[in-house]
Length: 108
Length: 121
Image: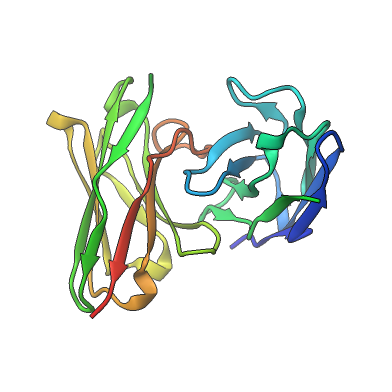
């Protein structure tokens, strides 16, 4: 199965700063079938990005996804207070579908 | 709007089984797969399996083979996940999530609100 490794595990930033989150796959995600989710405390995950770079409906344009094959990035251009949460990447290129272990974005 | 509403929290004893429901609304129930994902407290997301509500076809993660059963009732737009032989390691929040289509790879959107299953003697 494809193992997704997210880094860093925790990222401490201030509102207004730029956040860069990484997701590295153990094998090529050949069709860019990679998604990103945001999970706030006590809530279900929410889809942000699919197909590595396509924003989901209603997601602000400060969120962007990029990358291909084994290296993917989620960028939040200017952090808002509500962006501090845990972020997961998810590959659906090969079975079984797998998730990264998450990056916690915390307020500095 | 598209919505998945799950059943309420459960407390089970070791060795018992639990059955969690996921009721879909706001779209045609038989045109999207439903997946099940669990999350232990403070941990990440773990995919358990999926169902094609149109055909009834299912697929399960190897870890849960033989212990999980996903079923559906099309008359009430509901999918069920039953997990047997529970241990304390199964204490987690269980989520259902809609797939991208039928039997096609895709992102999960939306997710149900989650159901906490606690296994304790």
